[in-house]
Image (cartoon, rainbow, N blue to C red; front, side, top):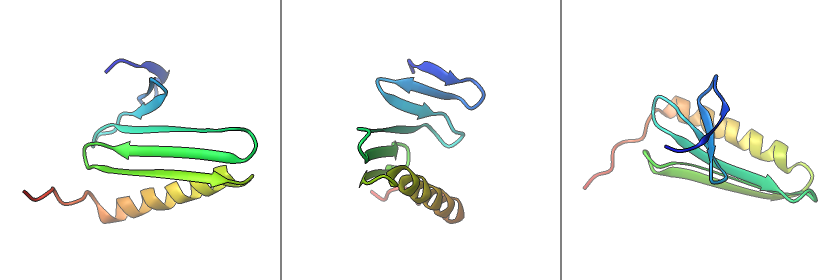
Length: 88
C-alpha cells in the first residue's frame, strides 16, 4: 500500500486521511476528528472480517467516551476471538 509512515515501531501509516494499522490478522483502518466545540467523530473498520464502528459525540467528554467504548469493544473482541467465516 502507499502511505506515510507515522510511527515505525508499530507499523501505522496514514493514507488519504485514514490511519492504517498493520496487524498480524490484517489491516485496521481508522479516521477521526473534531470541530473544537465538542463534536467528535471516529470511525474504524476491518475489511478482512467485515466489521466496523462509527462513534459520533456532541459534548466536551466525547474523546473520553469514544476511547472507553473502543477499549471495551477491543477487549470483547479478544475474548470472543475471530468471527466465524461467512456461509455461502
